[in-house]
Amino acid sequence: MTRLSAHGFSHFPAPSNSRLLDVKMKTPDTKNPPGCDEFVNRSSVYKEFLAEREEILRHKWIESEKAGRDIGFDNALQDWVRNHRDKWLANRRTPSPTAALNQSN
Image (cartoon, rainbow, N blue to C red; front, side, top):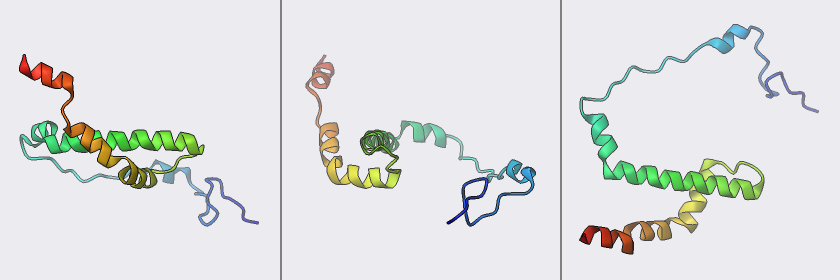
């Protein structure tokens, strides 16, 4: 029988000093060149990436609810790409009738 430590891992002992938990990781101080943030926010490629990511996360939520557990991002990504991406891309690239009406006005 495996005994779990205080934090749930059997192969790592629980920290004896709670100050260890207060250590903050220092992130590298990187700054984008001037104008880069504006470019990224207006980039159509980046907008497509964000839209696709949102669909994958939505798919992850739906499939996790069906399974009764978190299926994980990697599983959701693979399933979405195999079963839904082509149709999603086709619908996204086909202009809707209302968009065509709006452009003609």
